[in-house]
Length: 198
Length: 230
Image (cartoon, rainbow over all chains, first blue to last red; front, side):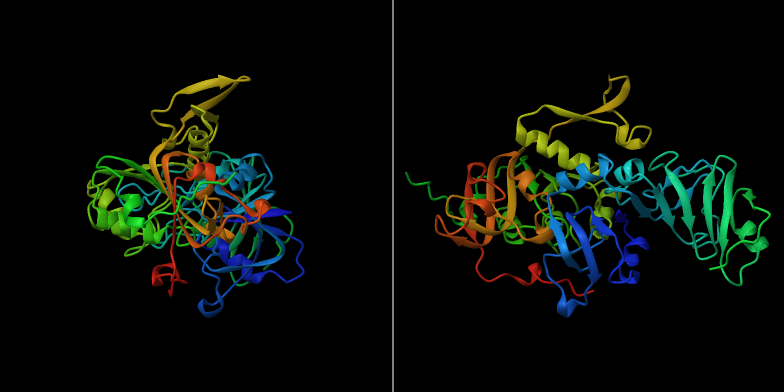
C-alpha cells in the first residue's frame, strides 16, 4: 500500500508506525519509503518531507523529481492520502487550503492529492480553535476538491462520509454521542449496534 | 573529442540577468535551493524579477533575501506557508503571487523544457485555480490548458557536477532542479563539488550538461545550507 501523509497532523503518523508495518510512505517532494523523523543533530540536511520535517529512509527507498512525484499522484498510484481539513461537507467536499482574508499560503500539492488518491481520509480536530464544527453540511471556504473524502478521524470520533450523510463509525473513550452530535455541523447517522470505542 | 569546460565565476554568471527577467530557482525548502547563487543575484541587483520557485523558503533564507531586497515583482509558486514575510508582501500588494498546484507547476516547467506549448489536466477544475484558464474537451472529459513555463535563467543546486555541467542531485534536494535545468534560456548551476570530466559516472548523471551553461563550485557551504534548527 502506498500512502501520502499531508502536511500538519498527518505527517506525524510516520513516527507511530511499527518498524515492520507493511506500507510505503510517499512524500511529494520526491521520496518513496519515508522512515521515522530524526532530531536535528542526526538529520540529513538534504532529506526532508513536504512539511520540512527531517525524515529518514528505509531499505528500498527511492528519490525522484517533482514531476515524477506528481505523476505517481495523478495516475492513481496512491492507495491512500491522509490530509488535514478546515472544512468537510456531508458530500465529502474538502476545503483545506485557504481562509480568505486570513490564511492563504497556497495549495501546494493538496488539490492533486485530494482529487487523485484512491482513498482520501482526513485527520483533524473535530472543531476549529473557536469551537466551530469542521464537519459541515456544506463547505463555505474555497474548495480543494469535491466529493473526495471517505472517512474522517478526529479526537472525538471516526466518521464515514456516506450517501446518507455522516455516519458514526467509532467514538473516543469518555466522549458521549450527544457531545459528538453537538460538535458536528450536520446530522449524524448512528447505527443500532454498539459503537467501537478507541 | 573533449567536452567544453563551463566553469564560471558565480558573479560573472549572474551578471547576465537583466531587470525584468524571469528566473527559475530550484529547491523545496532548504534542500536543492541554490543559496549562494541567490546571494550573488542579490549582490548583482537586477530588479523587477519574476521568480518561479516551489516555495518562498523561510524568513531570512533562500529567495526571502530577494524578496527583502525588493528585487521581486512577481512570484509563481505553490506554497508560502513557511514564510510569513512573503505572505505579508503578497497581502499588501507589494508582490504579485500566482499559485499553482504543485505537480502542475512541475509539468508546466517540464513542458517548457521539453519544447511543448502546454499540458492538459483535470486538476483544479471547479476550484479557483481554474479561474481564467482555457477549458478543452479530450475524450469527452474537460481539461484545463496549463501553459508551459520557460525562463530567461534557471538557478540550480546540485550535489556534484563535472566541468561540462553534468549534474547529480542528492536525496530530496532533487525536486524541481532537473526540470528547471531544462526550461531556461541560460542555466547556472552551483555544485558542492565540481569534478574533472569522467569522474562523474555517466549512469549517475541526472541532468545532462547539454542543458547547463555555467557551473560553479561552492567550496565550504554557508550555514544556510545546514539543518534548520527549529
